[in-house]
Image (cartoon, rainbow, N blue to C red; front, side, top):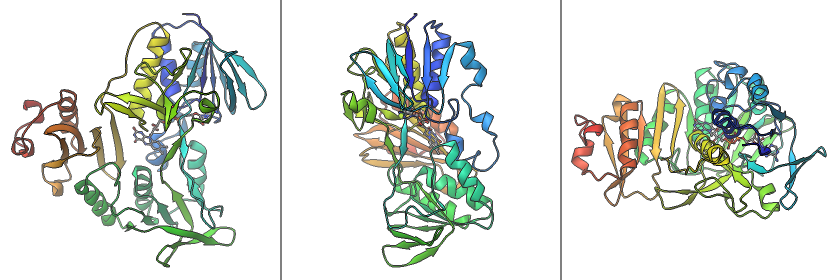
Length: 403
Ligand code: FAD
């Protein structure tokens, strides 16, 4: 294969795409364009070990810089793509470069959803998506910090765990009536709420922020019930928005993410899209979805690279995800949308158990807490579209693999 490839976005998916292109002995010219200052890196540690200073920056990288020389990739960092001309097959960068392609890959990821309230531009208010965000947070974070986290999703709760561990005073404010409301069952939400409370984190549910108060720096947060919380750092984690604007400008189909098929190909046979920015068909749900997960970014990157190299392969894997908070590893397989009922395997008090989601008698998802065995075996049951009755499922003496 000797086509010229241009990749927009130098994140996790882009890094994996290059790894697979190398494995498949791709020999064309590759240009990787990223607006950040860093070679492709892994984001999960940003809210976990990197924030906690347990990991150095070089350990975040998907591959060391020398890898990109090995595969003769021109890497343009600190460079933002501003326009794509599909008729001429040209990518234009904000600083005026024009780069032609035979195949183009959108790997533009997502950006934090911003909050627009009085005081939201005060100093001390942070978002967390990239290395620079974390560097800024780390320069402020200390055992004396008084932190308010807006949003009790994965990122907010992971940051809460790191901050509580170093001794900071942490309050989490969440609009819904339970933590991680969007992705896990009530049992799992309650478990996490209790774990955070045990570590001294205050959790305020069903509550919204009305304003951030302070002169130059944020000094308190005003809630919609009129109460105020003193604070000197605010971290906002209220979700992400896919970076689809350039694809939309060039008239590619968008449905939340850039629409791709199971080969990660858009409606233009010369353009692929991979990772957080895509809306892709999900075999399990029978509809298209957008996912923000490493597994999805990596799988789509492999599929796109193989198809670019002439190997006809399709994305069909079961979504999975993880979150680390304190000494608890949550592993999720499948998607628990609109489930009928849940079954708990094991004792919640033991801090090693699973929650299985059932719809129309089939197992559609599993959340495993410190229970990797159930996670791996549960994932297989989801893949095989297995029907098992409640009593059997809830009996921890019967291994999931024997069902
Ligand atoms: P990204 O890694 O976001 O990369 C996209 C890149 O494209 C960015 O560098 C962006 O700046 C660049 N870009 C965008 N537009 C342009 C442009 N016009 N020109 C040039 N460059 C551009 N997933 C898990 O499975 N488990 C976890 O525990 C987990 N933890 C996470 C913790 C945090 C703090 C965050 C932020 C994410 C976490 N995720 C986790 C999600 C996971 O990191 C993402 O799903 C993954 O990074 C997606 O990869 P991507 O390449 O699609 O996007």
